[in-house]
Length: 174
Image (cartoon, rainbow, N blue to C red):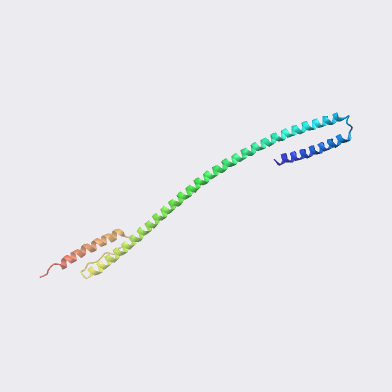
């Protein structure tokens, strides 16, 4: 496009110089010889019209090319905006999923803490019952901290033996 504008400018300046030269030459010549100047002017005018038509055509092509480039740019912008919108929606969905997983993790941690507290309470009850029943000859089996079935069995044994001891203490002896 810069080349076309430069070409137009050069041709316009050249045409101005030629017209000025022809005009100056026409004033210094006698009135009897205007025919060769008219012929030169006609050729120059025809060349100017031809160049003008060429430049008009080139300008039209450049406008069409600019329109296509703008249309392509607009289409690409629309495509990128749609893609960005889709990615934004995906990020928001992943954020919601992360929040839901964080909530589930918090609930699991709370449940684990509750279970640990329940195990501590069960250990304390079994231990206290074992101490209370020792004087009656009842021994409580030892369990590991993580042996849940052993703890359940120990609790069953302690409460079963406690009922037996209480039943024995509740009878009248002669």
